[in-house]
Amino acid sequence: MKNWKFKISDILFVVFIALLIIPQTRTPIQVALNKLKVAVWSPSVENSRDQQSLMPFKYQLYDLNSESVIIPVGEGNITFLSYWATWCPPCLAEMPGIQELYTDYGDKVEFILLTQEDPKVVQRFLDKKGYNLPVYFPQNTPEILSSKSIPTNYIIDGHGTILIKETGAADWNSKKVRTLLDGLVAQ
Image (cartoon, rainbow, N blue to C red; front, side):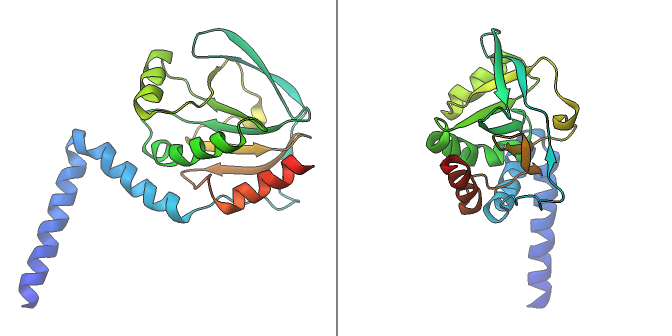
């Protein structure tokens, strides 16, 4: 009986590895694994001694229609800023939570989702998934907000203090994040 169980686990392991090697199945498996992480990982507010502040600035961006947009950051408004891509499994795993957060806080918090991809690819992705998130393309990024890893997400208060900086997939629709935003909005 032990040998039978051992062989089944070996077969399952080989099948799993084969699925990861096959290009068509790799991304869905990676997204599913990242969704498991998102289900248990909520971003944390930085300790006050570790929080960085940025000088309030006007972020120059392009929207999906290639029109120039200027969005103030740290000038009295709360900002959720996210670097992401349509081909990034951790980004895809956390996107439903970001959409839910945007649905509930989009009129109180400035959401800026940044990508370097082709706008047509991004628009097809948003349409396919039914997302109505505000996506932009950066012209120049302040050094303090630049990141080489995606996803990287920030929550910045109205004074320019980076309260959360999270790299990797996380549950942005968590009670912890909502409590933080509720407190910031009430100020």
